Length: 330
Image (tube, rainbow, N blue to C red; front, top):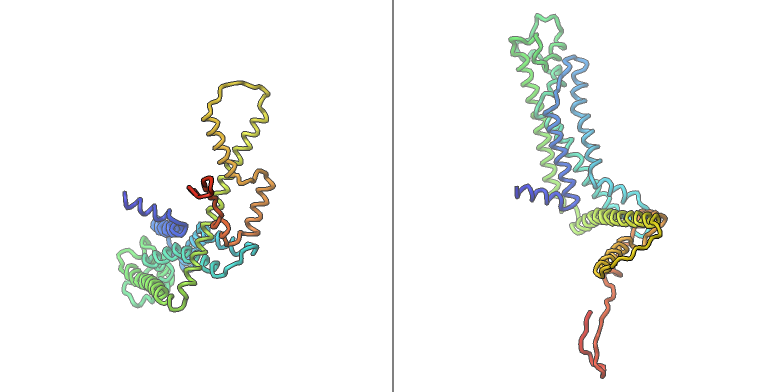
């Protein structure tokens, strides 16, 4: 249970971890879909290869676009690419980094699907059983009245009557499955080798300081958008509360009821109203809010917080009658 909590905390720590978790879930979903998918080869020469390649290619394309859709980096990348320059210049390296991160995560589930289909071998047998030379194996059914191409097309269908009491179908299936698994393991080895070589040679061709800058500002864009969305949610909640209260107060009858009012309740109410005013940030009209949202996209704030970070502080000093400092408080 503790390990599960640690895993959940890791995936909730930042947006990059969430994206990794979503990609892993999509990969597991692709495996589950394949294992639950009832693959039935048509066993017809004109349809075997078309059907098999469709099963091997179409689901990965769907999983790829699904990975692009659920990846948070996609929205951040498009916003940064399409936004006007305004007070903040665009950094092509950040857009490139976000695109690379999005592409790598989106390709995980499709590659898992392709590798699983190759290692399993059923789709490969359906697609390429007709490409095998039947003279390499003994036991070819000759008394069926079918040509060799149709017989080879029926190899994936183990329930076909022409292969009863014959080891020909099993021999051909094992032969094609070996090629399928060899291709699958070769692709997996190639991907791992490319990943390892890329990780080892990356410091030789890229400045580490530039990479850290690019990664920092890509994370900044993600955090900035999150904070903006959270602030908008808080503002919308308080704005809605003010509108509802204002509506009911306008509909209230002009009846005055005198009741004792405790002082502590007044103080709490004043503090609550001050907190609400602070969350509204002075934006109290629809036109103001629309203008603010438009300016946020058209003119992102400058990346300079010197004025807020070095805000002047107030110092209170107590002096005696002769002007000597007795006590100071900041």
